[in-house]
Length: 247
Image (tube, rainbow, N blue to C red; front, side, top):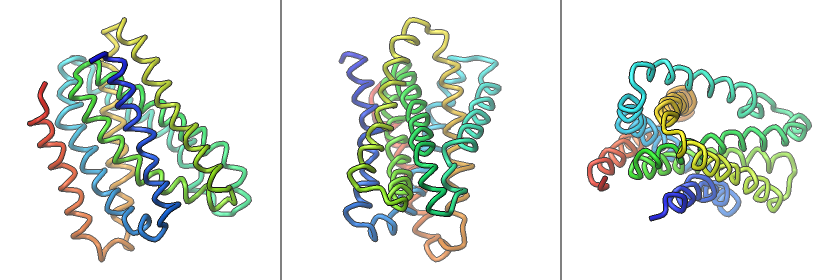
C-alpha cells in the first residue's frame, strides 16, 4: 500500500469519522449526552493503552536517552495549547461570550486536529500498525469531544448546517498536519523519534489531565461501575490489537 494513501485513510478515521459524535448529538441529543460519559471512559482506556503499550516503547527505541525529556515537553506543550485556546469555551458561560469565542473554538480545534495529523503520520511512517492504533485512539477521543463542541456551538445560536461546516473545516487540519509530516519527516528520519516522544506526552496529558478528571465528577458516581468497565474495555481492545495486528 502507498504510505501516503494509508496516512490519508487513517487521518480520515481520526478526524472526519470522529465527527460522528457531533452528528449523533444533532440526530439524538438525549442518547448522545447519555452515551458521552461511557465513550469518554472508553477513550481514556484506549489512549492510555496506546501510549504505554505502543507509543512509549517505540519512542524509546527511536529516540534514546532524550525520550523522557521530550515526553515531558510534549505534555507541557499540550497543556499550554489547551489552556490558552482549546478549552477557552469551558471558562465562558454567557451566550454573548460564547458567540465571541466561536472563532477561537474553531481555531483551537484546528490546532488540535493538525497535531493529531502530525502524530498519525509520524507513527504510520515508523510502523503502520502503530499508526492504525493511534488513529483508533484519536477516533475514540474525538467522538465525545465533538459531542461537547457541537453542543457549545449550537448553544451560540449557530444553525446545524453552519456547525457541521465549521467542524469539517477544523477536521481538514488533520490532513494538513498528516501530509506536511509525510513530505517532511519521511525525508528526515531523525525527527520521527522526537515526534513519537512528543505524541506520547500529548496522549498521556489528554488521558490523565483532561479525560480522567472529567470522569471523577460526583455527577457520574452512580455510573462508576459502567465507567470502569468501559475504561477497562478500551485498554483491553488496544492490548489485543497490539497482539493480533500483524507487523
